[in-house]
Structures are given as C-alpha cells and as structure tokens.
Length: 295
Image (cartoon, rainbow, N blue to C red):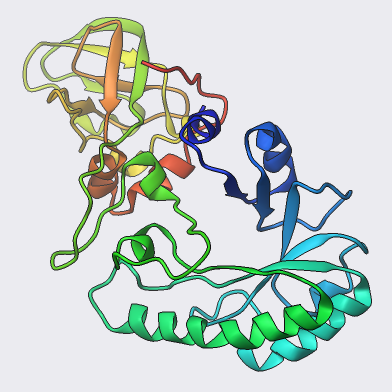
C-alpha cells in the first residue's frame, strides 16, 4: 500500500532490506536499492549494497551496486581510505557501481555530529566521482535518513532515504524543527469475547490486574505475536482512554471495553513511549500477516 502511494506521488526510487521485498514492489519504481542481500539474478531495476571489500568478490559479474562508506557510524561500510581499492576491485569483478552512500548516526540529536558527518561525506564526492569517471560509471550520492533530511533546507545529494518520516512518525528533540507530520497508520483490534469482571477477580496470566469493582472487559485479537509489545501490559490506554487490563497474551489482549472494533493506537510514538522504545520499532514489529486496508 505504501509503495503504491509513493509511486502515485512521484517517488521514483526505493530502498528495502531484501531482494524478496524488492521484487514485491518492483513495478512501482525505476530503481530499488537492496541493503541486505547479494544478487541472485541480474535485473536493471535492482542495485545492491557493498559494505566491505570482501563482499565485492561475492557479487555476480554485471550486478549494479552502491558502495557504502563508513563516515562515523562504524556499523557498515568501507573506510574512506579504502575507496580507491574498492573501485579497482569492483571493476575487476565486472560490477557496475551506480552510487555512494553512508548513514547518519545522530541526525536526530542536538549535537555537532550531523555537521561533521555531513562534511566527511561531502569530502568523498570529488574522489569518488573521479574514480567512477575513469571506469565509465555515473554515480549518485545519498546520506540522509528521515532526521537528516530535515536538518537543513538544502539537499546537496541526489536522493534521501526517508524511513519513519514516510509513516508520519518522525520525532525530533527540542531545538530541532519537526515538520507537521500526520501519522498514517492506526492499529485496530476486533473483539473476540466480552465478560463482566467481578470485583476482586483477576484477569490474564499471573493475574496482575484485579478489578476494584465490577466492570465490562473484552478480549481483542492482537497480542505480542502480532507486535503488541508485552511491556505495555496493564499500563497502556488507547487514544480514547480505554485501559489495557492485565498481561498481553500471545494472540489477544484485554481492554475495558465492549466495542466490536477497538482503536489500539493512531500514533505508534504514543505506544512506544509507554514501553520505552521508539515508534519505528513498534511499526517494524507489526505482524506482516495483519490485514492492511485504507480508511
């Protein structure tokens, strides 16, 4: 659904983790960059990430690749000093390099780290462009994630890689401007059963919630197997103020409600705050088997 919407709004490029994901959305984009797989076949719409010098020899000849350079995150990517060797090895392997990329580690923090990482990446462009020209390659450059995209009004790269901003859930600290995003995803549960919980009765595993008085409760068809973080047990209330009662189970959770369809959250950041994580994790952990629909 998101891929189709992006294409309708004119987005031409996409970035995904696996080749399998790329093939699912390949009809919507001109090019898809794959971060985590090596090529199983050649496709002019697909490009693959090179993270190490050793990885170059593991790619099939003719593959389109993009080289990641470590500019300070120290997670993936070759060292800047290895740039020349990487280009020689890619050419020897018969690869076609179409891009240079890196990743920001602290764009969502009020510090100087975004600035020096930006400068480090920019300083590589002339070297990389000269090396590419000697091989007959034309490069594109991209560094910014969601937070980095909105740190400056200028874009000096060829593209950006927005992730959480695509879902309207980007949060920035005080002192940094957060665009007026609107979250696009809401999580709903369907009722399984309703009962009257009598005063003094306890519900769910280990009975961590005890009813202070008679109340109506219902089970809904979402649990931690679907991505409903268990740490929210007995602590969370929905946007409409409906309390989660007791411990979240694998496939269901109990709320103080009897409605047929229950809005669990309409902003993943609100749920994330209760369990001490980020909205990105909440969204990423949602079960791929959950029904998706436009409303």
